[in-house]
Structures are given as C-alpha cells and as structure tokens.
Image 1 (cartoon, rainbow, N blue to C red):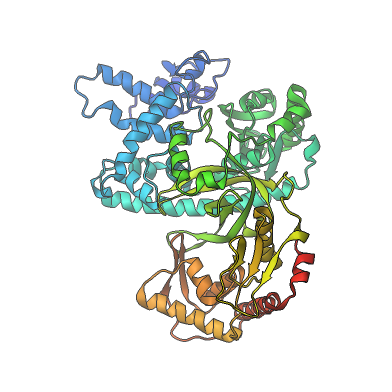
Image 2: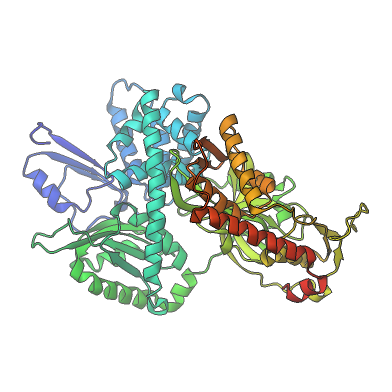
Length: 635
C-alpha cells in the first residue's frame, strides 16, 4: 500500500489487537483508522482513530454493534459531510443485517433496530426477478437456498453460511465482495453458483471434521473437563469455528479446536497450532483465553468467539490451565447447569396442526429478529411419537454427493389425529427413538414447500407414564380376511404391511397413547421376485430420463413397495450401472442412462437384491404372525 502511495488505511472488523502490524504501518507514515468490535486490549493501538463499541458502557444502545455495524456508523458520519451522496445511506442496511446476524452479536439496542430495518430492505431483493434486483447476487443466493429474505434465519441458515463458505474453502473471499456489490446480473449468477458449490463442499468438510472431533471426545473424561481443547495436524482451518460451535452446543462446554499446521512457523522455527474457539452458557471465552496469553503467540475475539495461535508444544499446558481456570471460576455445578436445554412454551400437535401453526408462527414472529441475546423461542411437546421417518443425503447443485444428512418425520400426539411435519438436521432416521418422547423444537416456515414445520433440537424418552398397558391393547385382525365392514370408530387402522418391529411398534405405541384398538388391515405383500422389483426400478429410471420429470422419495417407496433403507441400496445399484442420479430436495431425476445394462452380478446390485428378499421375508412374517405374539413382543 505504501508503494501505491496510500496515505490512509481503514480497517473493518479487525485491528484492535494488531499492535505489531500497526507499528509497522506507522513507520511508513500511513494513517490508520481502526473500525472493529472485538475486545480491546489494555494497550490501545497508536492510530488516528479507533472506533470500537467495546469502549462504551455495557448498557449503551451501541455497545453490541458488530464489525459491519461499526463500519456503517462510520459511513453515516461520512454522509453527513458529503455534499451530494449518490444513494441514501439506508440502501446499505441489507448488508448490515446480513453481517449483524451472521456475526453472532447480541441483537439489542441499535443492533436490533438495524437488523429489523435491514431485513425489510433485504426482502425487496426477491420481489422481482434477480436481473431487476438492486443486488442481483443476493437475489440469486436467496433463490438457491429457497428463501425469501424476510426472516433472520434466511441469513443465519442461508446467505451467511454461503458467503463464509467461499473463504473457508478457497481461502479468498474477494469475489464475494463483487457478488454483493455488482449490478451485473449475469456475472452475479455465476458467482452465486460458485458460492453454492463452495457451501456444499463446506458441509461435507464440516461433517467429516465433526466426526473426527467426536472420536477424540470419546477419549476425554467429560466429568472432569470444563473446556474442550482438541487438536490434529490434518484439520482444515476454514471450518474449525463452525465445528467448535456445534461441539460447544452439543456438549455444553466451551470448545477450542486447533490445527497443527506444518506451514505455520514461529520466528524461532517452532511449529504453530492455529484455531478457533466458541463459547456456550454465558462463559466469557475472550477473558479465559486472554488469561493464558503468556502461552499464546496471538489471539483476538469477543466473549462468544475467538481465534488464537500457540506453539504445538504448549497445547497440553494451555489445556490444563484453561480448564483449571474455569473450574475455579464456576465449578462442576455451573457446568451441569449450562448443559440443561430449556423450553419457552409448552404446546401440543393440535396447537401446530389444523391451521394453528400459522397463528402461533405469526405470534412468535413479532419477537424477531432473533439471534444472540434474543434466541428463537423453543417449544416443548410431551408424549409425542414419530411417524413416516426417513433420512436423505443432500446433493450439491452439480449433482455431487454430500455426506450431509437430514431426517424428515411427522410428529403425532393424542391431542389430534393430524400430523405435523418436521426435520432433524445431521441425524439419521435410526437416531429417532421409538415410543413416546418429549421433544424440544423450533417452529419454522419452509418457503420452498410452502408449509410450517418444526426443527428438532432435542429428544428424550417421555417422563409420563403410559395411559394404557400394552397387555390391554385390543387388536382387530383383518389380515387374512379382508372385509368391507367399517373399522370401529375408536380403532387405529394399519393399512401397510410393516417390515420391522420398529415400524410396528410405532403403531402399537400410538394406539396405547390414544387408548384405541389397533386394526391390522394390510394385504399380503405382492409376490414379486427381487429381480422383478429391480426391473421395475430400472424402468422407472428410464421413464424419468425420457420424460425429464422428478419423482419424490415417497412416490418411489410406494411404487416399489420398499423401505427407505432398501430403496437407498437400489439407487446405489443404479449408480453402479452408470445411471446419473440428480438428487435434490424436490426428489430424484435421471440425467443420463447407460446404453445397455451390464454387470448385474456386481456386489452392489446383489446387495440390493438381497435387501429386497430380506424385506419381503419380514413382510410375509408380519402378515402371518399371531396377534398374541405381537402383544408379547411389543413394548
């Protein structure tokens, strides 16, 4: 910059603790204005001006501004001195809202006001075609993540992760600046697509890293550990902060993840570890890390998040010291208290279904924008059970597979015969328990599917006693002799043939909970060989390719009469035979088919045929098993 003749450097969201770098700049006779929101050191940097809300009293309405909001305040001051600004300063508020919510600052005072105003600006980007938007890049991002921009979650789960993914994957966020500011719609579409692919790769990296971190945690004595400090030479720097946040929430402990990078060396040539830290339960993480600064080569951040580096040889000392410090400050009782997940309101499925979910959602929406300091309301539902549980792998926009999972389900209870949809991110369907449970969820609106749904946060076995003993379960058996007579009005009718005790037990648990009898009215399984089912699947794939249509997962399950697990084996068999599958939230499409079907003896195809045979055997069993055995084995 000095070679370019720069006379002034203005930082954004950084600089408060960069004392050495600032000293170097001062020697070059360049003035510096630092705009930042990270915790200030005791020694203030020698600069022309430092604009940082940490210098304000904690109850000041500007005290929790994020880095982007501090920059906005500087621009406001510049606008007061500019003679004729080209556009009103308020046109920048959509960018301010994105930064405020994505940066995890407390949404109170002016932060809350700026976020509210910014979201109003943000949603205007989707009210016309992206080519006509004032920020086409944002319009395309919202379109890719199927959101309208009218809620904070559209930023926290949509725009924010996509923008951050670019630097996490590529190590360079420069084209994100172009994406957010360019008016060239064609260029923005290309950049948004690249951003979407980077976010997909980030998800896969994040899931892999989380698995590795949890494998290390299995070796940790959590009863004596207050702060998780973990490291590995292969961990990618870019997603450490994301995974640290996940781990902190899951285990109820501040978490510090470090990458023992071979490329980073201290001045003495010693290897350094660099990483990210995330807090939980109101613990001031910055203060904890700062008190161990004698072991660190650099650090910075705020009470909720921090970045740091230290010699690899100092990691054990740092781990012991920071754990001892928090143990002395708060003790094990405080840690146990931090692990408790609380709910704000108790509701039933009837409160959510039958049109009531819309009313409750609108009432809760008045509390937005939600975020740090104003969390999304959590709902407690008791004595519920899950139905139609299935999980899916998520694909990126280029069709690439991601090891990133979500499980979808219907939530039921005795308050109504209606069901309410929901999903559980990063969990397989096997993680969903049988029987009655208590759950904590967040109510959300799926703008793409135009429906209200819940996001599952936590689940436990119900603490309530059963309303009826299983031995009292009344079973009406119509499997062998189908009748046109209507089922009793108080009976729960099972029309599909179960293929596992898990499937059947869900219906028995529901009948017990609702104090109803259970009518077994499913027909015998179709007499089709596994090879015939495989031929039907291939025929469906060819039909989807020829017509260019999409089949949803439930449609495939019904057409083939298969379980979700066996269908997944079938899709893997199609890929083995060189069918190109395009999976998405909408369903399954086939973009390419092989000229001829070959290698049907491959292990993947044989696995599918074996799974069909096993499933058909179980269905035949459940169609014939006597009712007294059902009662004896069912929970």
